[in-house]
Length: 238
Image: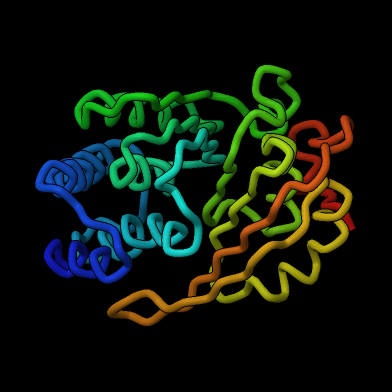
């Protein structure tokens, strides 16, 4: 996907990019490739792959959920900034908090925030399990998101404790999501979530399948969740 097709594909979804935003994405790409030569941020380095499989894919949740309203978003395990930073470029008014367990990735994101001139973006070097038990952040976010971090049963425990009541948890998944959703039913119920929507689509060009799972937070999460670091992945709720 080249830049022109990227802009056109977003236009087809009702998202219009200004010249400034187009330039921000280009600078994001250049910086990602530059830093990736020094540290492992992504295995995808061609412009076509980054624009399609990182930028466009990150923004795809906005095809099914309204990001034009005032929102405080938490991006759990963002890595090189996906999906939080592409969404922030498209919707500059939203406030984004990004949590990642690797200090070097946080350093990259802080540099990115500076050169892209992004405001209302905050970074936290922490494990998601610890972050979710912090009273300053627990049940404080309108939207909690994760992309390609872990299975849905595990992600639910990492993300739902951060969502406020009547907020949402958005999981961005691949083609395997139907099986994951079935396995995550008990976890979603225990953690206070109920599924609002499951949307599937295919990426342009390569046509690989993607799924957006939007879970509404209908009640408070029991205080014992998330459990201590490493436990959700080692022993998912069943």
